[in-house]
Image (tube, rainbow, N blue to C red; front, side):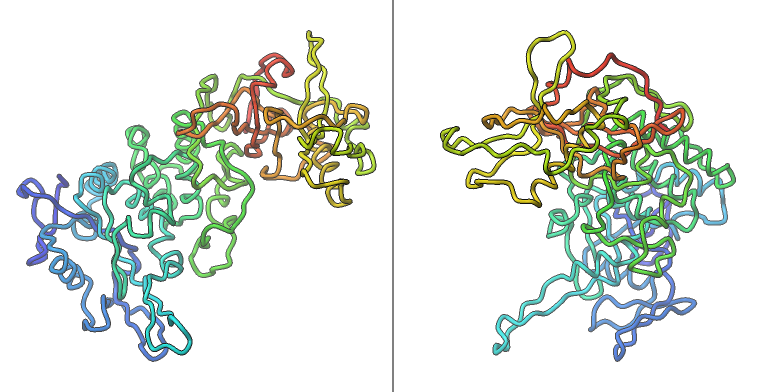
Length: 495
């Protein structure tokens, strides 16, 4: 039970130990707990020093405290916890202690009420000539709300067992549309570090220390090792936190290039909808393995059994197998062009089974010829189009960063579903001919609910002086295939 609770009937703060029934917690954006006035004519919102809100077109303007009482009456809530009243903001010791246990407050609450005044409904006519219309929740207004931009509300969302979202003229439970649209509302499956960071790296906080304190509350094991002190050196704090995060869950490496297609990305000061995510987390000085230069995966719940790694300060040390072509920049393989792609065989020669363009690879200590698939030919194709040839040549050049490839080793063979394949389309940078890259085949991430290891995500790193730089992961089909063509295990230091 929290130290203090608010009794909604008279809005008095009472000791939590005196309450012997459940309580609810409140989730809201601090800058919306003052006076907010809505201009009904212009449909604009302006802020006053001590504002008022409205929860329905039929309800008069109310104070923030009055709004909570209205919600308590509507949903039969007797006791509620929210920081402005339940924490003495002038007592640093009390505030720091409550922040340290914030995850418990929201986890133990019967329900969390999220105040999202921007959340509205939209009406749509069933037919242009019909008078009837459908009313539905405007998810875009939720995505662009202050509540969806703040780091503390992310922690409150993830740690809560049940969430009631209350908007201007609509309310809904978390399982109604929300959990299908936003994985952070899905209470039936746990989130990985990669999933959490997908959202966290686009969230903001008034104080930079709060970014770490909120994130640490999502991972209680780490929270125990974090000191709540706003005067401590922030750079040391953030490096220590991400190091603890990586030690707990290596899925921190599961990221790719930024897409900006699946969510609204706020700016650091929330003034521009078009602001780049670069203004949020990348403003901090973080190592590449934190995903600072990319975007983590929002839905894929990836896990790995790999344990041969450690974190020392800014450096992530891993010892594993890795594929690389040290002679890449001097080999002709880096200059394979579309005209070097072999002619497509006649379909009738293969009984309509289809063909696969492969690279033959010599395996050290083995006389067996190994193949890696480069391209699957569509059954109805009789020849490769110019655009297709260019794409194939480009993919082959990218693969040549990880294994020696000669023109003579490209050939068509009958298609087989078990042919190994590497997809390199989601790394954070375009692979340059002058750089050296390593595909860490010894680190394999598979889906948490997957029953097969025939597909995996493997990290890619780039040589960067005395260290390596993390560039996200690539999708690998049949990763066991590379066990005997990768060199001996070695130490890679990623910064």
